Length: 290
Image 1: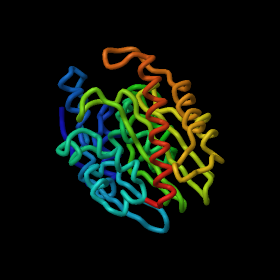
Image 2: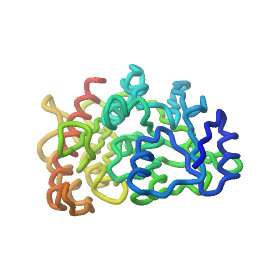
Image 3: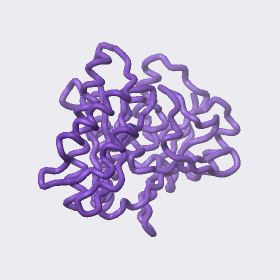
């Protein structure tokens, strides 16, 4: 197995075209354990962390651009980004240990296509767009269209994610991400829940709810979004009826597996609990502007 560290997108594109079956990596925090677990080695590994564009974080004209290989520690350590996207920053901060977060990236977390990837539900509720390098240029697609199943993506051979774009949230927007894991730290989510709300006055005007680890890919919860849209906020936040509707919708949309980490019934129950808790946090942040 050979290793290459291109410094431009074009160089990486050429290497992949000239070496069919090669793989890129944006941190290798998933790749190395896969090889140790017996996965076949590709003829060439292409390290994307030496390409400046993939390692950058910019904010211009109401839009954030996040390099697909940027370490998540640089997201969680950026005050402007965490203020704009607290739920996404929380999710990024849950990927492995502190040491792992100096290597892990949003691009790698998405392209690995694990149903339990922590950052993916938070990317989706924020409407992230993925800029993908193709054989002869780029294409931009919603981040939700990248993962198509466990370990499977819509990326063709030789394609890789360059960066993500995220528009500034509207005024009065709050978001949150919560997960349930068997251990206190450094484990894979049994369920993850991301919620983003926008409020105008005392009413929710827009709502997005996405669950992770409960289906082959991250899933939206339309009935929970419908229950939230138009809901009134009181001094105590969302009312009990709205929270109950969110929990019921989240549990219903789940299509989880039964394994040693959690039963189907348990995951459905936890999905409802986490969704309503995340919604309550998002509503409080939206109302307080934090």
